[in-house]
Length: 131
Image 1 (cartoon, rainbow, N blue to C red):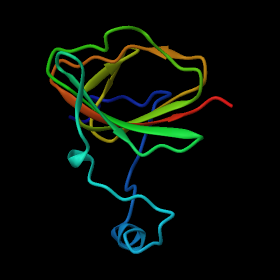
Image 2: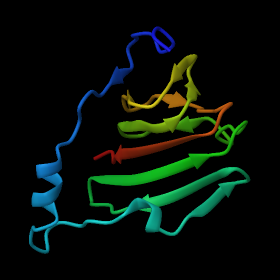
Image 3: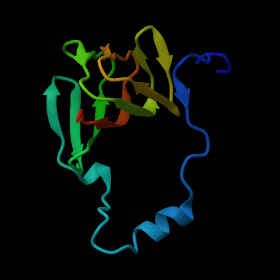
Image 4: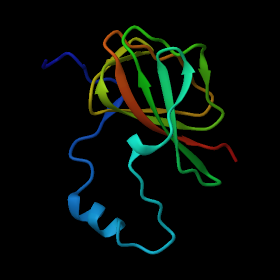
């Protein structure tokens, strides 16, 4: 698979997160929300695409999407604020780039995209709300 996901303006995470960080987080006070994303109620966006809304603040929204094989976002996604997503599994094709597990994508405000997948894929993301 080497070379399958070429270096581009898209960024890839390596070694993100440490177990001791997670252990500390679960012992914090009430100012932290901890959940298992697979336990969040799934909502079908369109046939083959399921969304789980993750905890939000006044500045950002979190979400997770599961795309079935052969699905595409139903329309061009327009961002008023910044949007970021991380490919957890599978492969997305977005703006001509093949993005496999570990790919981290950042869209500046005003950008558009329409992700699709041939194989099926899961992404987790954060939308930074425009101020």
